[in-house]
Length: 473
Ligand SMILES: *Cc1c(COP(=O)(O)O)cnc(C)c1O
Image (cartoon, rainbow, N blue to C red):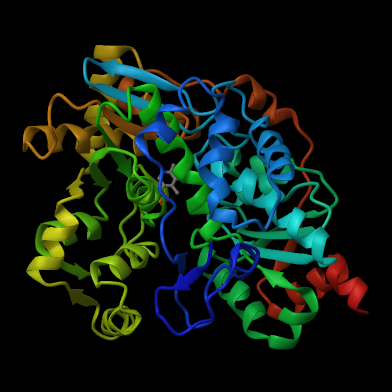
């Protein structure tokens, strides 16, 4: 299995190099040269298997022999043992034709754990084989930092430094990060804003000597292995509901387009997916694209579903590559135009190709809250605001006859309601409780370092603690 860049000007790489590289050298994103194919019999053979076994079978072709099957099975089994539900991603029925796929049973209660719990272990395995170490640095406004920390904690060959703006995250968010006391985890409370944190991360990456000595790396949402890990649960859900002998539709609450792109990949591998509905909150660049064929930037507005407050969906580039017939120069031209003028458009034929698979719907703040309330009233099920955007978008797609009403609709539940207790309580009158694994969060010891908004100080802090630097010295 080889991977090519969406911009067409970076070397073709195998799995290990793609895993460690993240972004391609030409600024593009790596995608498989061709999708592995699963026949109806291959899919039928997945019925009744445990999650981790389906995961091994679905992902193995992407490794191209880089990791042997038994070692990979051990890594996958260990990653998903960290989930607090034995089905890992259970399906819950909401009404006659709608299910939710709960992706929030990992350590930080959000769907990013599904990919990151595997990614941290894959990094460690490949680094050990190569005798290398990396230093992960990242900035968080609160939500994604804990998933990265949980992915990297206790890994032998990885040190992680996560900066958050001091006093500007919620207490639950801060405690989820700072109560991880592993010696390779370093939380920095920065005297500044989230943008200051991001600028410092950029500053560290732009300092080539520092970057090389520290072996700087990132576990951001453009890493191919995250997409690969997310393909798995589309298979488990579809097979549980009757695939390959029945078609299935999915609705995905979307921000960076990573999760729904994984569904697109599952479809390309042969899973009979009827339609993919993209749910956007008020930051609706994707819904506007599917309505018009034009991607046009707009300012980001804060919503009840903050993990989707994104106006540039970085993983959309992977779909664009296919819409433009895998022409890297055309992708580069479209994205240059987007950067310079804030927009680009596809042709009517290219839009028609996209709409044969996707539909997009925007769900505003009122619609989100109303959906939390009515779902609680009708089904006794508490949705988090991100998942509520999905449930409302699925309903809108049905109302517009974009999906076949006889096809089961699976909405991806991307966060546990207890991650967003204030919004959920406001909508439903019910305050969701933290699940048992986090119920003592407020009693746990915290460890963090207060640092000023100064690049040299932060770099010295990292250099004094990163094991990659100590070995280089
Ligand atoms: C990251 C995230 C999303 C968006 O997923 P993408 O892959 O970026 O589209 C949706 N919901 C929650 C809770 C998230 O954390």
